[in-house]
Image (cartoon, rainbow over all chains, first blue to last red; front, side, top):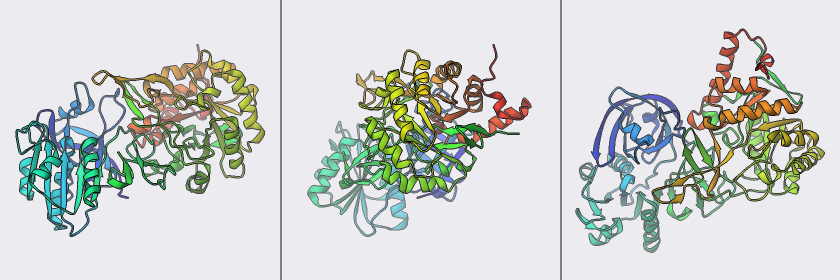
Length: 263
Length: 301
């Protein structure tokens, strides 16, 4: 379990990189130095009417510089994420993290790194960390709605990268599994983050192929640290903490072995 | 400066406690808050056997508050006694165990099991709006409140706090019933039943449809109910409902609460309970209050 910190962090830069997609870099004191790919941070709103922190994945971690890069989607007018999108260099925001378990990569096993929609950003940090450590070979498969393929150029810099778009405007038409089939891609193990239908399909695919599959899950959260039991998922076995077949996504997760959880 | 308060013969170093269900058994928050600084830790409700709780989504944010329908997920009393009580015993704070059940027998089983455990008080949850049997069903009828309070008192070795629901026509009637049943103290208020609808999907946000509303938006309701109840009963009151900071806590004490529980605010700031303790001390310095007991019910017309 990693150490967690609550900090007032400074925004270093922020830009819009696609429709409703924002890319913000923050300067932390301790959080970045303790973070790993697949973990998340909670951002607090400055609006007192919005009580709950917003969990946001880590698109980039620079432990040395102490910076975190957060790429997130603005979920609507008047939302907490819309408030965050207005932050400019020099502004401050309260952050809690790093939270959750993060990805544990199996060395030497060729990996599929699969992202869908706003599940794409954390896979970029995973790709970079695997490449930097030389843990294993990997191929990235990213699923977008349309031609707004945010972060794609950066995935290409990390190595082999394939794309699926729902409207067929870029890469394979359809979802990430369609791209994997169309381009006849193979690997030994899957690491994935994205919408539940995608994760469900990948879990089924992995079971069929006899592959190990790690998925990063999402649920409405409150505390973000495992106390309130809001963000549980159904687990196959009785969980040691809860003593029922529930695991806390914010604590035991968000990354689970697909076979451990029911989707 | 004396910040200690007496609650049913137990001395708390200060009146700040945690609200049941928001703080687990303290382990997660101990990374951000020094539990030694708190008057007491009130645990998440525990039943005779493990409960899986409700389906997700279990929480929704609303303006100035939130709804929850966790449904009293808990690991059951055996694991709780084995793991959570020893954890809390490492700290210099009082332990208040919140007890839940579907039936009187289930409550009794937990209370009996706790008789020999090193816990300071029991808080009996007869006001959870998110479970179908038990919970609130016991808390909305004064005869039922009095009867279950008597049963608890029959078996409890520790002082018994009855936790009351605001989802009633007259909370003082429930408070008097608990007092008549022998309750040593009262906790109020539990959450107010609410609902949120996603207009884009035209669906309920919570899987349970309804949930308990908490947070600063309910604070004035809680202050009013604590004040009314303080006029109606002689036993001490633990005030809760939307306490976000020291000012809210002091308001609750002035309304008649001997101690306060901080719940939803923990989600907004995991170090908030400690900050509230410090804020109360600053208030006492500012107004030259030498003993916090002077503030209990000290609101004047």
